[in-house]
Image 1 (cartoon, one colour):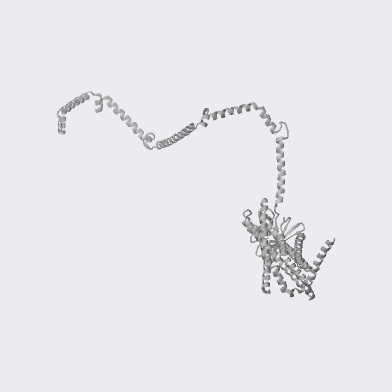
Image 2 (cartoon, chains in turn red, cyan):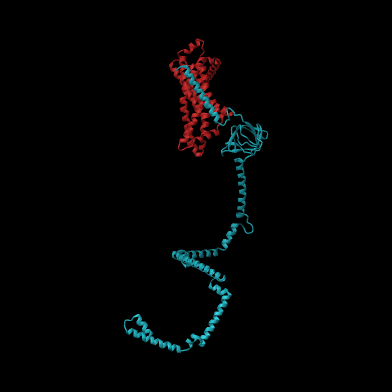
Length: 252
Length: 331
């Protein structure tokens, strides 16, 4: 019972953090430089790893589906399978996991150290709410950057799949047939659904990581513990939310 | 790193994302982000068969637009088509839902219609025709199957069941075979004998079948017969030519047969010959006398004897000259 109240308390704390941050939304133009810095750290520097990772996810997807779909003689639908999977599921989820590991951990570590070394307290004393200066720019940056990363991941995955299909001897579906199959059964809504999912995941990751970082108490050891907690919580939330968001999007 | 270059990079990155998103949306079937100004038509169907927004509208296989929205309208469904500008569709063009592959993926096919006819305008309704889809074909196949089953059942009944006056076909066949069993056996054993003989080379037929020499000879004789027949043919044609010549009065025989004057001449000559021979027989004239009077014969004999003697004398005189010969002959 105690455990449950702790969880509910964390959920409430996170939501309060969100509300307090959004209250400072009108101040965003004044911290444009800070927003740009966060965009750079979250989006631009994540580009190489997102590209490489999604390219190989698409390739492996094509390879595996080519191997298994050969049994049904349905190789010409590899394009559809890779396209839909990347756009609807793997693109957003993999980018979210990457962001959780690469950006979320960094945010938690930064905020946790600031908290542990009482920089947050100093800010509060100077009447600078940490939500305004630390949380809001990061949330705004992830909202802007996450769809960009997700669409890049989609396209890289698609092209990775196309390359594998064309140059793997046992599959040998040329890229024209691959993209024809991809276009034939995909709608714009498939891609937008994926982008919506990525947006939700990114927002939740940053929010949770900020919350955990700001709520760190103790010393350097607790900083590490907070980072671990933040990443694990982010991953769990990504996969749990994935189910519900997907279901909601499919029903709409 | 200064803030300006950071901002530039983030800006470029964001613009790249927007461009990629735009390309993706543009190339997928969800219609266009920026619609070209074309015109729309309405096509009413009894069944749309899964035609959906964004499917192509093709005129003779060429894309001329896309399906905008599909909606239910009373007892039919309507597809609103966005036709590209500049594409002219006559009023008598007919639209139908076509399948581009067996596994779904439909498009709306539009026929050419009459060229130069009145054209459809924005908001007009295009004529449609229903098309047969796979499920209908399969259900018709099912009907066909049940009919086939019926027919096969009838055949089976007439063969196996029934049991009329003479029983069924198989019973009758059975009876025929059992009744004629010994005869059939005898026939088969005779056949066996014959085939065995042929195999062993007995009899003409067997030799013909088994002996290659006989076969060669037969071939040779047939060749000879052919040659002979060819000769006979040339002979016949020659004869024909001769007969024709004779008929047309050419050549001696023809003249003889067909020319009256020659015949008269011939008769006259025969009569002359007869009169001459009569005279000879009677001893008239030189020839007659030669034949009938032996005095002339004796004179001739005497002369010959003299000549003989003179020749003997010549032989004894040794070498002779031409003058000597002439002189001896004269005296």
